[in-house]
Image 1 (cartoon, one colour):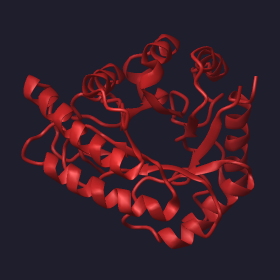
Image 2 (cartoon, rainbow, N blue to C red; image 1 turned 90 degrees about the vertical axis):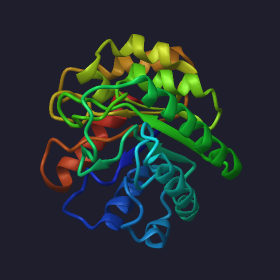
Image 3 (cartoon, one colour; image 1 turned 120 degrees about the horizontal axis):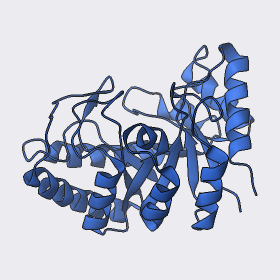
Image 4 (tube, helix red, strand yellow; image 1 turned 90 degrees about the horizontal axis):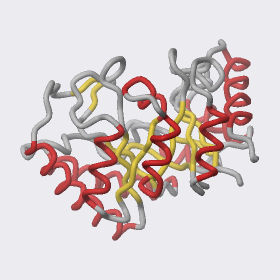
Length: 262
């Protein structure tokens, strides 16, 4: 059983322009992923011939806030249109807007109203996805190291949102780097999330570099994913531990080895 392996072009081959990074990722046999789309030359990226598996699915707004959730829906529509240029069918969401990785409007507590608003907003976005043939994935984040002030960010929260909405075009972007920092118990988490998973994202802890540089046993995680029948995309959203082109190539090789076919 094999997975589709993708690499976030924002984080590797950083000495190259983005189009050249995507080209190199493609040449090495991986699909590519990007974060934001509004600041990129999408036709040039499409011309690389790479397969793109995901990108950010909104520009502004918080899923959990009645005063800004309409902005999430509005910019999700714009993201669908942009995704067509790259053939992307999986669009990433967060429960709150991020600016340079930080919560645009930090909150230290969650409320029942946040849950209700997030589920209603995700239901609306799911309908957009169904009409366009794309899936929106809600990514879990850690609030201890990288994203303080983001409510409903833990994997158990994003799973509850996805299951509460119950829409086939709303799934989880299960980020195991974030989950290890915030929750741990990754193999049981994978088993619990099961069919709610739209994509898996990986990096090691600490350092957010490629598998094998930290404490996570990713070959064991790969076995757990096969055991639940997961055959979807696994995305490397990690910095290369080594410098330059050689470091990025080594990172992709380590990633491929961790999730090689059984």
